Image (cartoon, rainbow, N blue to C red; front, side, top):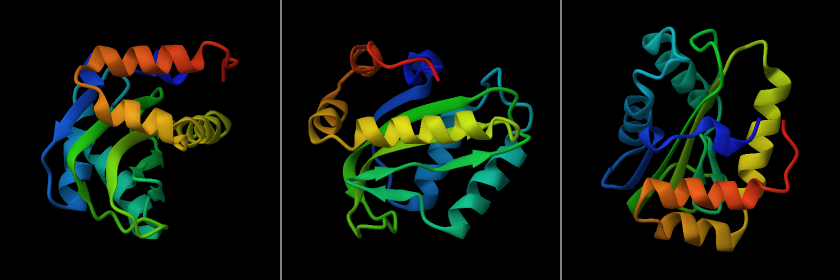
Length: 156
């Protein structure tokens, strides 16, 4: 399973104008609302917020990765957003964020969940990749970026 196979233009939002961490999480959950893999939106919200309370998912390098292993989904669910302005997300490096990934996977898909988290952080950890993502003006550019970057990656 590649990141680009989980995405469609419907789950990509660019240059959002948001002011708080809670607004970002709410916006990400709104982006995936109606996704075929979500069976319980309220539980998904609860589990993402619970995970965020355990430790910030601001993973550094201007990236936030709210995520959950949850019974709220029947398949992996992924959304991506960029922010127009940097935002404090209580990141581990104390830097603001501009790129947000929301990932939710079924509880029984622990290995896949960890592999997807690793792949996202590996790709987004590269400065050139982040710049291209932030500079994207259309969802198709984001899809093409992941397709190009993952062409030589094995399936998860």
